[in-house]
Image (cartoon, rainbow, N blue to C red; front, side, top):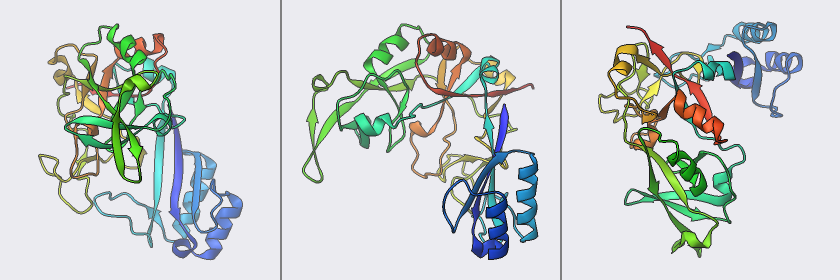
Length: 298
């Protein structure tokens, strides 16, 4: 695993023009914006410490209290990103399935605009291309797979997996939609689902409300986020005894929704998959992104 840091939320207004200029000249911003500084650097490197020193001299510190909104006058955003490698993924018993959408395939072939009676309603924009990916839909977020990918996954005897049908519509006029048949397209698309729910996270996971300044509710009615300090993406932890008490599974959803939305759905509960699921997708060239899940010993 490699750690990369990104500095954000830095402007001439909160650090002063002199330090902003010095910072921009010594460590140029990754984005050509004269009023906003953003810089990626390797964590704990010389550049990392020098940028942090300059910001400290300007009176700014990293935003760490995520229960309240960032004070732009005194704080900047510092995120330390975990970048996993194949060895990390191969040694994990379970992984978080992250939808793979490198070329915005869902914008090209299907844009989910709304939910109708629990069925994803997809707006076909152009003929779907054959993609061996687990693609992310939008509004609400979900995982869509082409029919040929569904067939591959069904042959794997993956425990807990199921698929839900989708409907395809075409845009008519400015705001109207008319249902079409998937026969008009090379293949239908399905929503990936599961029959299994994970136990609650380990106590080592710090949960906070998804709404700034509001207390976390037991029913997650104020949303739910993981506070992993400056690090991200936040890692999921489970107790060994809780995992051992489960029936064997290959795909499940978390018990907790991870979202800032108050009106969350099951799609806000990430998928946790087994090493077996991961290896099966690799073997069959089904593309997704994967993050290791941590198992805490009791």
